[in-house]
Length: 162
Image (cartoon, rainbow, N blue to C red; front, side, top):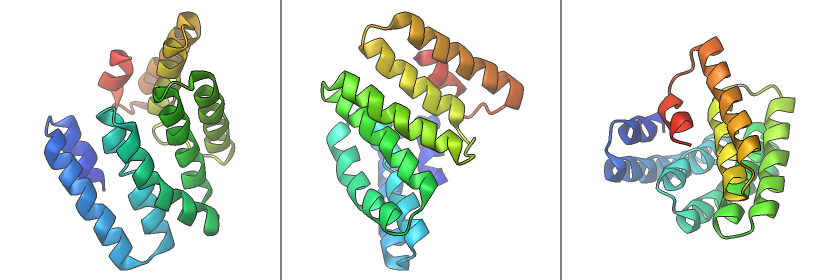
């Protein structure tokens, strides 16, 4: 799964999507609930990177169902954030921000800290689409500060892009 992200970061978006598809198929073959939720939710981010809301949402549906059925809180929160982005991308910006924010709050409340700077930057992007530049810039500044504190640099370029 992570290979798809690193292929993306290295500048191979088509290979990243192909790798994501292979991971998805493997997760389904394993029939392990966590792997299916992980495989569908995290892998869908390749579509997010490409700005493709409909393929993202199609991939998320299975992940959401499994995460909710087996009560996997991290992926329930992550899918809420991706769904919020999807809604905003399709023009429902206020509703998207609300849904994303609920997912982000849930993600933090259960103790998830991995890639928080990236998630926060995605929320900043939604606020920028809504015309709330000051709020967006404050969120980006928080993300940059957290990257500096934790040295979690995997998505630093994306944070600065936003």
